[in-house]
Length: 274
Image (cartoon, rainbow, N blue to C red):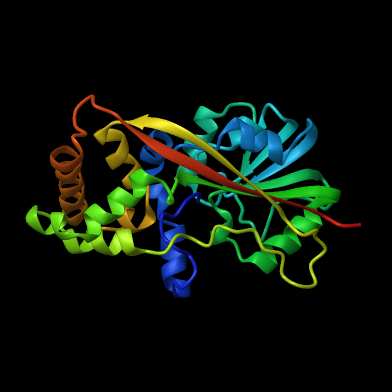
């Protein structure tokens, strides 16, 4: 149930459930357009090869495929059968099971690490960490990663200005929807340890890199966001048309032309005490 593109915090329980369950509707599209974390972040998270890693909310396996090089056994836990089907086809050799972060289908004390890439904000932190404490070995790692376009970059500042300014009003399409999306707060992309749970204070590292993306890539990435997936077909098509027009007429990005988009991965790790 991997990423959101909009905050999980502040949603009603019904909205959270709908958003969290939306990604399977676009599983193949998600696999094609949503970049995973960089190898450097995974190497920092799990510095040495380990026995068993559990990847929670594994989605289509963007992190799972990197974990396979760092563990003898990788168990990918994903609630949506459509996402599991894609994951199983593109990441052979890992165990793919149905489950949630708060209810893992695993015995106690089997894992050296538990990871979540762009999915931890959909997990109840108390329930998820209690389950992590149950399945991890003493000293085992909990890791949470969030990857995406760097919100502090000049490119994203320009995009926000474009979508919230007068340029959107001069073009056809759902400009109000675009402005609303650009003004959304980022997801709660922080690993916090609630009081009373047996984990160390999380460490944090940020990894940055650039990706050359075409208009198709950028529109495709937009289409992996839960609030876009849940639009009706007509509204979504209108949104994409407006974004393409803005990219071409204002930024000159169309056809095979690429733009260098700065990405970042916020990475957290904590260890089970005891």
